[in-house]
Every structure is written in structure tokens, then in C-alpha cells.
Image (tube, rainbow, N blue to C red):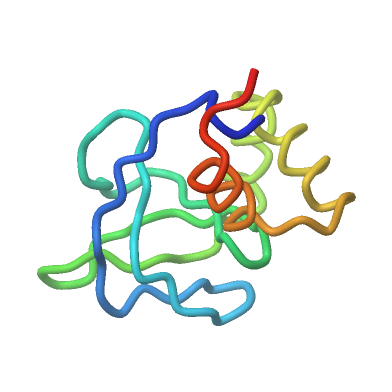
Length: 108
């Protein structure tokens, strides 16, 4: 994933916490243009781990995928998982990609 190759629609959220690193996520970005729905994937901007949105009363929360769910994600989203692996290897948090895109504009 290179900065500028995707559209970000940031929607504010309260009380979202990454189940992997416990960092607070105060927004959700969607390339599809709508708010997250139960079962949608979330990628933490700090630790780059995948979570799933799930309903909790009248709001959404994040949870870690089960082993079977993660295997399914890896099988169905190989390009996304390769990009995540690359970013993890670079030790380059996702939020920095957003900052580069905002600061310098789209790159090709």
C-alpha cells in the first residue's frame, strides 16, 4: 500500500481499543465510504494487527480474530496481508502512511 492509492473516510469513534496493543483508536477509515459494520476488518494504526468489529449493545467494539478467522483473512486477503507484513518489517506504523499522504499528497 503506497500513500495516495486509497481513499480514507475517517469517522470518529469513542471507546475503541485495539485488543492487541490496547491503544485507543479514535476513528475508523473505510475505503468503501461507510461506517464500519459488524464483521468488518480493522487494522490498528499503532501495532498493525488485524481486529474485527463486533456489536456490543448499541455500539461497535474491536476483538481479535480467532485462529480460524485469521486463516480465512490470510487466504482471502493475501495482498493486504503482504502489505501489512511489509509495513511490520519496516517498523513503520500505519498512521505514518496517512501523515505522509496528508503532508505530501498522493504518490504513484
